[in-house]
Image 1 (cartoon, rainbow, N blue to C red):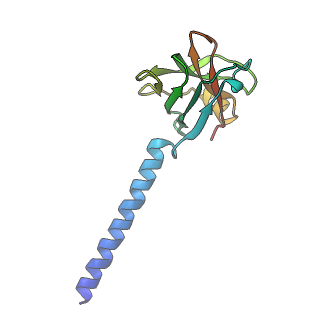
Image 2 (image 1 turned 90 degrees about the horizontal axis):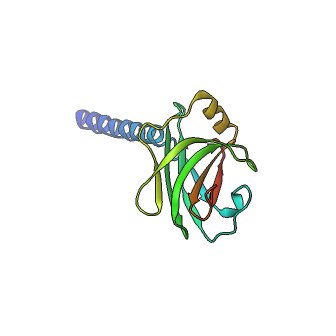
Image 3 (image 1 turned 30 degrees about the vertical axis):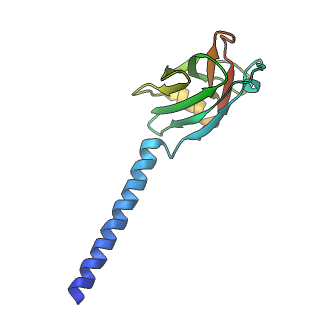
Length: 147
């Protein structure tokens, strides 16, 4: 009886350890799930009148790797990027995104920020936006919070 109880306790402990390990691996791989973003024309600089919207996640991990998945509606997107720039200001591209299908953009495998870009991200001085033929400078945008 003691042996059966000991084996049951050991199995339960191993199962809990495995679950804990999977949780921490998932957090590490996804950057804790990333920041949910909502892109609108009102966030562009200057603001854009558009019915287009976008949603997705942007994860920047402590090793400065970047994972992005955006979906847009109401527009014909031509490009998407992460830019360095404070809210209310425009800035240069730091992470180009790849078009996946007609209305989705993802980060390239191995995308990574420099130390300067990571510091700007942590300070809330980066944003993601999506461009179109009608709005070459950007049609919809979301400021990143630097989580």
